[in-house]
Length: 628
Image (tube, rainbow, N blue to C red; front, top):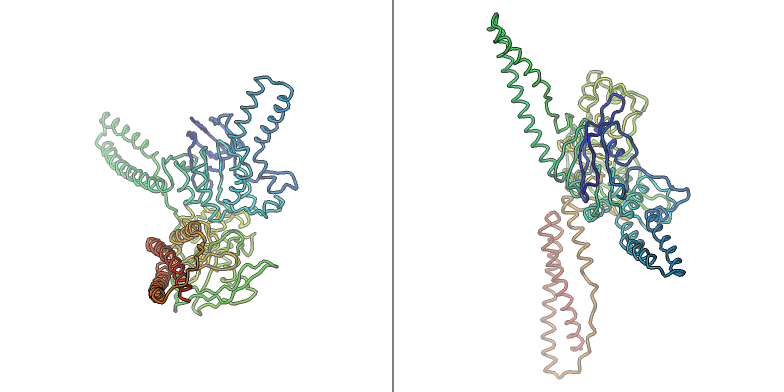
């Protein structure tokens, strides 16, 4: 059964042909991802599907009996609505059924008609099927998964930040239990735990899902098919993001191979046609063949060279020389806002070769710590000490320029103090071409501002780079380019990001900020997450030790006492060996932080030995009581 059908869809903005004869179907239960560079028409298509935008020609069909939930913008709610009231509005359809049930119940008090009883049974069954008796449980589960605490649920919705509102709207959309779920960048403003929860939820959702996202991990985990928009035309890939990357590369290579062969054929035909014209002076047949060949050449010329799938940006960070082992040292860093402690006695050292991902829940203080390390903010207590040879640079999350009313070109001329030609060459490397360089900085999008700031940063020699959410506002192509630039950078790196693809690619050390403290994990992001999940699993599986009541033995004679003492000494030796081995394992766990397989075995052995030690201690207590 088809849930979404799009046929020969066309959309113009003036003379700009945004969508060109777009045709596709989405079957019931499919999870489809929509990819494409910024400006490729993704948002236009999304708004057409949600009914926010009309189209010029074609057809869009969605069955009228399908319930649709949309996460694209923050809807308006009555002034004074609490978060709980916004969440409860997801159950308006259940409230309608509940009111209808009450009406039928009143009718049943007066009439005993069979039709009324059947209607009541049908309404009751539908109410139960839609989860009418479990709404409170569903709200709690969804809020816990998306990181919406009880305290936030009591607050006025209008008082929340943009990110907090987005989380509430996602929760509301999921609670509506729709048949079709349309999501536009749903992972924006979600921390890693909430994104992983959503990744686990969507495959179990059961309905049809259509997603726009630049989160490559998220797309990879959730979607079963990808539609890529480029210049208003769609390419289709029957798989997740990993499949899409390989297939897109293969298609590009095949198209490029055909294009090169075609260009070679054009050159051969041109040479032949030219010779025929020369030979055919006075020979009408040869002239006709030559003209026919030239028409064939013209048809072949209409084939365009396949668009490169990698960014055409060609720039990288400059790296300054560095001497020593340590880059920066954080000593006793503390920071509070009013009564709220953000950072509490942070003592850490950034070492040469470190590529550190600073992660944590939204609002936990990651940007504050990054600002302190970059010296753009001061701690309440403590200090940051740099190696004398360190030259640092930072890409902030909120990008500002000295004069927002300058043009792009003037910004580079003033900030880098270079010639006009050098400035234009640098800007061209960052995809600012032609008349675009005369656009005002104040008119730039988030992604364009990031590119312009990176254009400045990459011109400076540095050996300590700090990035605050570097992939925000960027499409996948731009993210891939930044990754190439960072990959070529050789200095120390400290960055805040929720982009797990970016973290996984670069981090060799994880700083997790929670409750004002840093957990310092040396190893990859994958091993960090596996370790955390393993710890949580073991904590959930390990029951609290319950000591059985040991009856006090009866008085013994001397012979029995000697045997008892011998057993006691044997148990003491066994306990000492167990304690020694457990200490060794704890040291091995610390040394194997980046080896998940080794960690798993060590944790299993440690759990088994700890349980054995607990039993031996109970035996020792019993024997000791007998010996005294």
